[in-house]
Image 1: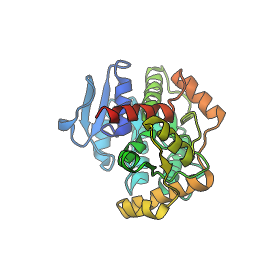
Image 2: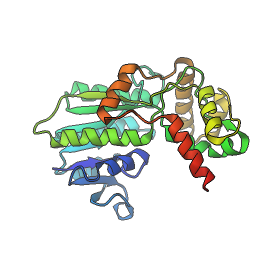
Image 3: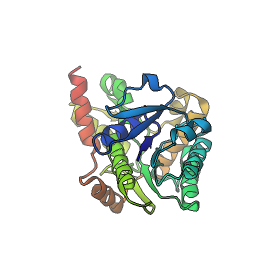
Image 4: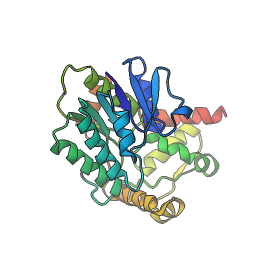
Length: 289
């Protein structure tokens, strides 16, 4: 029996592969360039692309459990829906699908609405699946190193309502746990859904204060300017998509409930990692060069 991991060379897929290591014997990693793949030992790279249905069919031969992560591209919804259908046709006994936190609430944000549609498809087809809904990735803020160190500014316009950012390592571990549970079950299991979140609902001012503490210098929040955010991102469809997401963060927030955190804690058998711990570790690494 075999697990296939899509998005295997990206931030989340690589974490999933790392956390699967030693838990199951047969893991395949879908990649457009298997000859260049550098995954953990014991992982077999297989050629494929979610945009190429025939390659997905070939990669799913002999696969019993699928980790489905659709790329953040303009036709993400089509790719994800076709992958679900091909997996259904292949008779996989379990799917772990990476969705997004608040997918049902942010109807005007394209990649949220698309993931919600895939969730509805999985439910409508009554497929055995776990839906993982991660909040904004903590590690996205590593890209803010230069303004944090050089200008003392935290520049992600997350607003004042609060968001429960999640560590990508927790996403990978949660996915691995559910993949193994479904893979080792003697029969297909019922559907589950988990919010993948951090333990704190943080505002822009909160995060700036955390960085001030971690860096030992004053850091201020850069504010809620969405025009500059959109202008510096490419391509345009992606820039507007993210602008709409941050706009909803500013107006509505994305704070986890106590039940969300409790369920994730039970799944991981530990508390989810905090932003403060991430910032402290990042600051130490930056100081060490």
